[in-house]
Length: 423
Ligand code: F3S
Image 1: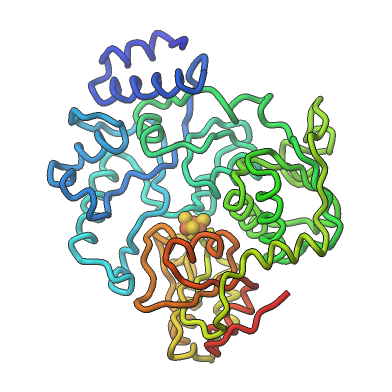
Image 2: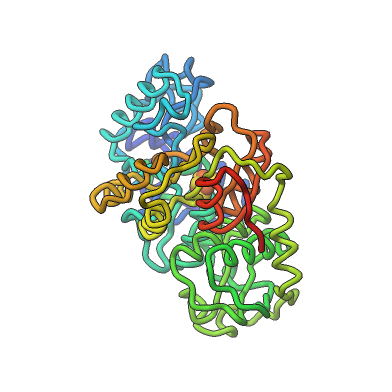
């Protein structure tokens, strides 16, 4: 790989041992994927927090050791300096307020908080969400990023037109210290054109349908780049958040285009560049039903856990839940958790939505989600969710049955304890 003089000096230790380790890691990574050089990044979103019992023995050696081992792949413990570029902590395992509801041991909460203090002193911003773009981390079009988390990556590439591959703990750890990431994959303009045409032949408008469309398309195209056209009502952030999360779950989609909506595809021609679509597919009533049926893993209509907010909810989504619950009570055998970034939770508190949801018996959770934390209310057997991604993962992770539906269907199930949703 070609390195600049500055990068070579970092590799040789001119900027300290941590940056030397980071450069060594980036070099090995770049060589493995055939990158010819590194590219500058000013936007890193990764997983740095310590919050699991499995790493207690590393934590006992100090948080420099945690970063060295888990974020730099270094056996030698190096002192971690302030990060070189703006860096965001993505979602974590523990809700710092509602950890008791998660059944978390207090020692782990202390571990997470101590870890956050260490990271904060080094300039890592505790956004603690899978949707950093909802709370101020909005890279510009064309900006080179180093992000983890599949639903965030697909949003970054497609909706924002910024550029990232799906990075890992180690590569984001190294990028944060050096401001560099290997120049390959989605950083290269020629790799960003569409490959598959998707004709949407039924109206797709509400959030549930965008989730179903994403789930169907992801499963068919896998890691390729779909270009959607047809009867799509102009979506908003919430719908594209759900579409992308679903497509990245059933397949490995990291980028898509919607001509006239996403920034790198003003037209269909621009979406495909000089390439011809490798495949053309249709999304109609049969495909919508197929996706919906795949997402229902439950047979028991008595639900005991409703999970909303995957990816983390926007404030409008929290408001809708509050509106649907106002003056009502959740069924005593059901738990309702609404997940949103901590910053949005604060807005919900100020607007009274938090109080309304809590008065009904629900909880607003931040910092985490059940799929990441692997923690649900005790004894849960049957869940319902408005998220195709959560319906895809949670039944397998938590060995529960799962229903997928609209927000209204989920809230109705929370109030009655019974799943009555359908297409
Ligand atoms: Fe976010 Fe967890 Fe869903 S990380 S996208 S809420 S599975």
